[in-house]
Image (cartoon, rainbow, N blue to C red; front, side):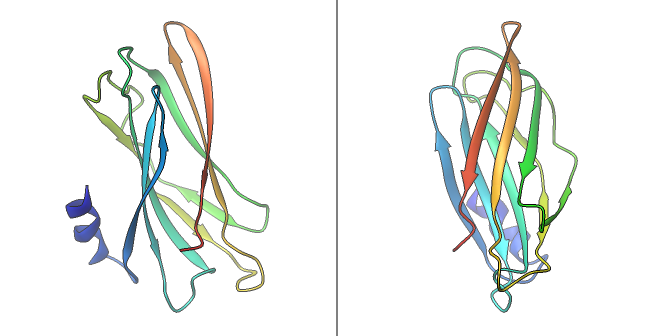
Length: 132
């Protein structure tokens, strides 16, 4: 994972930071974050990666970005909608955030994840700290 973040660091401005934001028996979420050091509250690229540690496959996996109204969000296509059981796969997506009110207002991000397991819909909210 860290090698992937280092490879992406060459693509943009600023260094990539690796955040481990959730580790439960149902879901693991790591986020690679790139923030421009010259304008730390203005722009951000976040790449959440999800892993399923449970013994059940997750179907219809969706990740949404919840942000304050003043932040513009651009979500990339996810790498899939099926998350295999027992840490046998991942789903990732790229999220770009722009904050026109920087530096007065901070960048904020909360991930909202939905998936179906055994016919039952589940939802998880994951706060992501972008004040690095």
